Amino acid sequence: MRRVRRKYRHSSSEPHLMAHLRASVWGPAEFVGRPPWWLVGEGILAGVLTAGAIVAATLFGAWTGRPALADGEAGLVCAGALALYLAFVGAGRALVGIAALLGVCLAFQAPQAAAGAVLAERGQVQSVVVTSVEGGRALGGGRSRYLCSVADADGVPLKVRIWRGCGEATRPGDALAVRYDPKGRVPPRGVRTGTGVPGPVRDLAPWSAALVAACLIAVVRSYRLSVPPHGPGPERASPRS
Image 1 (cartoon, rainbow, N blue to C red):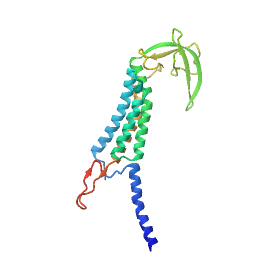
Image 2: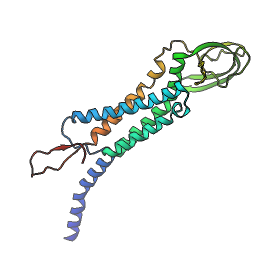
Image 3: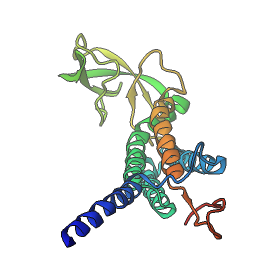
Image 4: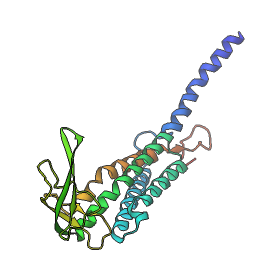
């Protein structure tokens, strides 16, 4: 008889344990139907502010020549702050990790886009001479990338190698067009035809959209219902429990 009771108690506790684990990993999401509008707004606002802060800080650092901002370090701080905020509101651990990971990825992608935006805005084009060409590096999809070492008109070699405009047919002595920053705050790049000014920042749109979506889901699923004050009457919703 005792074995039967123990088995019954064990089986009855399993649904509660699974529900607790599910709430801890993915968030409680204790609402029926559509989530509250203010909760949706809170999630979107958190994602937009974080993505905007990461991109704006990196762009400002590239424009003004501040390495701590231009290299994405400030973006990593923003991603960490987002993770702390989501953990504070009670979001699921998995969703906190996903949002933080997307924030880190955006912070790593932003420096290249910011440098491209600075060059597109105030960069100037000059002709350089190819001094050597490094063999193609496979990129997948049957494509390969070539790296050209170049020197300016005075014969001074550039510290960076150019891959835009450098191809299989490029040989030492050929001329390449390079866009450089007159203030020297971002490294020069080869000129690639068909790229407009908004192109570099536009490349960050998918990462930003994914970050906003992750924040929205994490915040919405962090919603809990308060315990009804008097018996089985209608439950009152509270932002956090």
